[in-house]
Amino acid sequence: MSSVSPEALAGGVLTVDTAAIADNWRALAGQLGPGARCAATVKADAYGCGIPATVRALAASGCDTFFVALPAEGIAVREAAPGATIYVLDGLFPGTAPAYAEARLRPVLGSLPELEEWALFCRSRKVRLEAAVHVDTGMNRLGLTEQEAERLAGDRDLLDSFALALVISHLACGAEPGHPLNRQQLERFRTLSGHFPDAVRSLANSAGIFLGADYHFDLVRPGIALYGGKALDSFDNPMRPVARVEARILQLRTVRAGEGVGYGLAQTVRRDTRLAVVAAGYADGLLRRAGGSDDRPGGHGWIVGHRVPVFGRISMDMQALDVTDVPAALLRRGAMVELIGPHVAASELAAVADTIDYEYLTALGRRFHRRYAPLAEVAG
Ligand SMILES: *Cc1c(COP(=O)(O)O)cnc(C)c1O
Image (cartoon, rainbow, N blue to C red; front, side, top):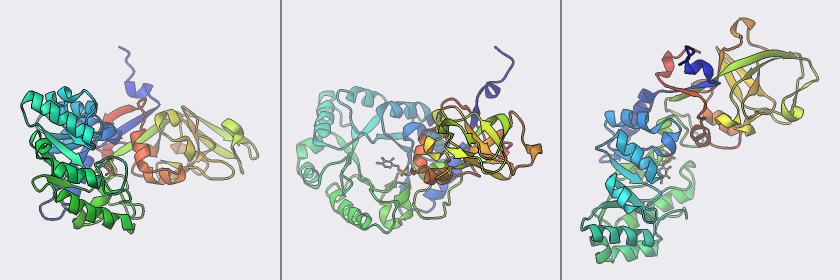
């Protein structure tokens, strides 16, 4: 083993604050309508924050129900939370029911073939295993149609072969509170879930929680808000930030007015400019679309009190930041620049890159040195 720390060998550091995730969960749970409980959506490696640490922190705070997309993610959650209830949103993959049973995963069944396969498996094992049913209320992605849901409701044989624990649907336009589809989906969900009176009902993701108590039913399943993300398009995000990406300065250089920077020389220097080239690029999840050009300013980073614009295209492994206005004493080779975190919201970069903060979080690179620590206690 070398005497040099792994952190010193990485281009950047990803800090995840699991106490902030747990705080966000408690804040959401505290604003629910009467009788509603708060689960947690931890798909995509807990939106980039890491399933094991995230699930352990949430379980320790009292969260007992988790939603993942894939069965493999469910198995990872099971290892971190042996007693939890785990739902797999992508449903039942063909031929995999024994693995769900072994890890006590509950598929969210969204089509009649999936329902048949789960029922057949339960009959063959002579045990009524729990599952959820997804009913589509207007998104046209996953879930039973209205007719299929009605057919299921009338099919005693099918319903008797497994334990229907939960009925869910998903909002297509929840991020836009004024969108008329929200109310329609709410009404359709009331009707369709009414066919299964013994099942727990769940409609709301993060956005649905902020739409109000009507949308909370028995169980809510926030994802992005737990991770400090912005659930609604237009509001003051009340959640605590939970992740920080810092990248180290590789080089400082001065570029003369009139010269271009980086690939394609996409952005031209207007005044003599001090650039810091830092070791994080699009291969680390810093999306290339947030680069700057002469036509369109890019995103920004932050270094000790100073906002520093991205200058020119973002490369695979690095990007340049304009640090002309930062006191020279703060700038040195090896110093860290915050690229995402308490001072640079992923939603701000996302607006520049024409995307949503979900994409930034779930793309957070695997090359960063990762540490779990309170954000407040990390220098920088
Ligand atoms: C991803 C997902 C969630 C969580 O959504 P957020 O917008 O991140 O809160 C909830 N339900 C379903 C069906 C999902 O796919």
